[in-house]
Length: 380
Image (cartoon, rainbow, N blue to C red; front, side, top):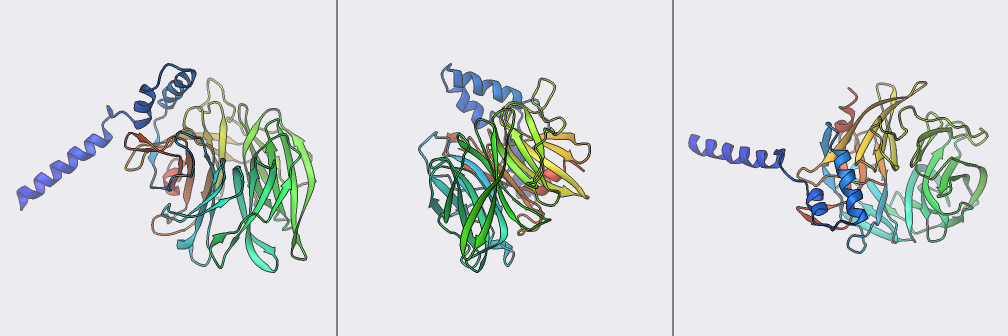
C-alpha cells in the first residue's frame, strides 16, 4: 500500500509539473505561431510580448458555454451579474453577443436562455424597479442594430430575462458602452450610453402607469472614443474608459457639469502597466476602500486602482491557463462583492475571453468566472 501511495504521489507530481512548467507554451502562443506574417499576426505577437512583463497571475474557476457565432468571430463582449436575493444559487450572468442578442447563464456557466434582440454590445442592470406593478430588475443594453438603448427586465419569479420592452433611440453617432446608475439621493434610475465620437448621454428612466418613460437629461463629450463604463451608486461616481487616454471620473448626478478628472495612473504610456484600448470596468470594496478593476486589452492584463480623494494605481494581474484556459483581449467585465454559493463565497469577477481554447483548439468566445478573493489578495 505504501508503494502504491508513493507511485500515485509521483504521478501527481509529474502531472503538476507538466502544467506549471515554465517551458509550457500557452495555447494562444501556439495559435499565433500558426498564423502568417499579416498585420494581425504582428499585432497579436506584440501584445503577447507585452503581457509577459506581469508577474501576478490567477486562474479562472469556471467558464460559460460558448456564445452563438461563426468560428473566429468577435461576438461576445460584456457581462452583467444578477444576484437572486431569495436564492443566490439561482443567480444569473448575462453576456452580450454583439452579433445577435443576450445569453443568460447560471452559476455553473450553463446557458439557460438566448434572447435575440439585435447586436447588443454592453449591458448593465439595477434591482428594485417597478414595472407594471411588479418588482423587477431593469436591464439596459446598447443596441448597435437600432442605435438605441434596449431595455429588458429580469422576472424574479421566473428567474428569466424578458424580451425587449423598449428601445430608446439614442442621438450618439454609434452606440458603444452603457451602464446604469441609481441615485442614492432621489432613488431615480438612469442609463448612461456613449458613442464612437466621444458623445455621452444620460437618460432618466421612469415607470408611469405601467409604461416606461425615458427622458434625456444630460449629455457631454469626452476627448476621444470611450466604451467601458460603470457607475458607483454609493459614491455617485461614473467611471468612463476612454480607450486610448485613461479612465475618467464624472459626478453621476445629472445636475452636475461635466469636468475632466482622470483616475491617476490610468493613462496608457510607456511607463504604465496600462496599454492601449482600455475596455471593461468594475469595482469592489474592501476595508472601507473602493477599488476599480480595468481591463487593458493591449496587453491582456487587469489593473487595480484604489479610488479616493487621491486615486492610486495598486498593481496589475493576468488570467493564465490552468484547468480552464486563460483570458486574453477582454472587452467587458463585471464584479459582485458578496456571498453567492460555496464556489463563490466572497463574490466573483466575470470577464469576457477574446480567445477561448479547449487544449490547443480555438473555440467560439465565452466568459470566465473567477473567485473575487483571488483579486482581493493583490491588495492585502
